[in-house]
Length: 193
Image 1 (cartoon, rainbow, N blue to C red):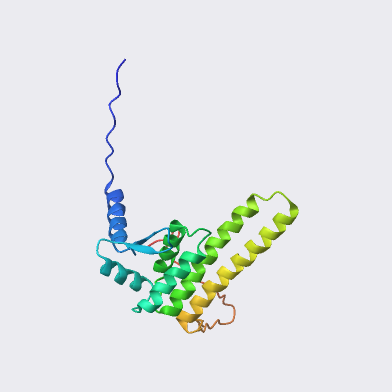
Image 2: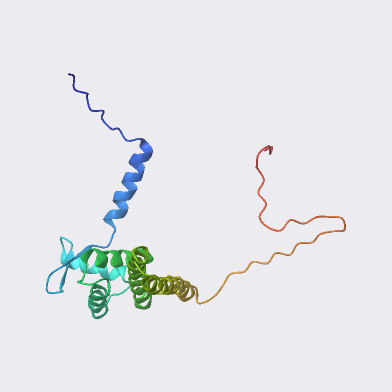
């Protein structure tokens, strides 16, 4: 009986490039939080002052009087029994939204919590046993999904000052001519350069 020799994996240059970008981005991420039984949290970073600065930056604030209550509120709102994974998920969502101020951070925190609740009711809806349970879970799930969409719109409006961009082009078409409305790109199949 012969043993097969393990084939060694050699990543392509594209895979190496993706991995390098991933590691670079990962090093810029907000540090995680470790929860303790007494409901207190600890920043998962070698240097606590740097960890605090990174958390504050990810929440668009320089005020500890904002950061500490926000973290406590998130810990209480992200699941029964204060779940460390949900708290870190919520912080990851906030960091990815990149709030520019405390109002954006509060909206991002609400969005994270609404998403967590949405997934909870999505799971409940999938496992209902009665019509009454199904109706209840479906109503809550629907409301949460609409709320999340409204929150995204509120964030967009806050960031843009409520302005919408509309571009109007004047096109003149002479008698017998035809106009095309939309984007026209040359260079399709059979096009000559």
